[in-house]
Image (cartoon, rainbow, N blue to C red):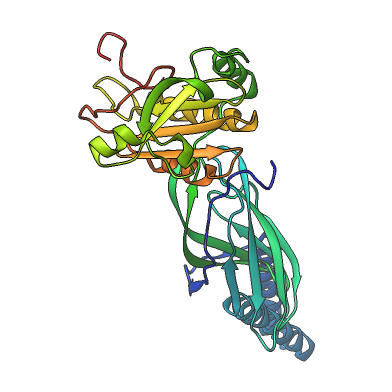
Length: 339
């Protein structure tokens, strides 16, 4: 997607370490401990000094493995930068900044996992005092405000005897834009919107007045209908028939009647978002009307606020009055007989 397309903002966050107490023996570690026990019995039964020296060395390796893995993970710090673009069901890249604050331990083979990560991330080596930045692809399942609470870090460093875990709490959030429908379905839904290129009873900078509406930030003052504005005490814009440019007026009705499921409501929001997205791609001006708010975007300029509003909209269970102009594209889950 182009740089002009919308992005969601996730501010930088630092980490706070907590220990979950997760320590698990690996297959190598289990074999090593069994072999150590065998050497211990042999040393006790024979009194062989060489066996005692070997047993001491093996126990020392176990102790060193535990200290090194704990010390390495304990001194890791993780910070997350902004997510460039977050759409439900699509990968969104964030940048993780991992710093090893330890003055003693290098740490190897650290694996990072999280519920919304597309796949675990591997850090082959992070030297003491070093910093590494890696891309972390997230996929969020639903639109809205999503909290990124924790990341889990695992390592088998240094000898592979134990799998140790630390959980870092990052306390971040990201606004996830609604899911975009597949390309084939989007083309089918968009087809009626392009209309005819000639004057065809659609709003645009022509000569005949098409309709009136409230002022939206970005409107040209040349389109103010001063007489009506003076009578009502606020700016009223006149819309004329379409000559050259296009304006698409989209109305999203958040009313959710009884019997309508969450999936049906989310499908309607996705359909509206997809329609707006492809309208902007085709160079149309889009005006979005929601309860108590009207937004305007042109070729993705101003689209961030529009997609953010659609990401955060919640269903209402009481009828909401919205003015619908001629030629408006209305998205609703009301039944036709109840609309």
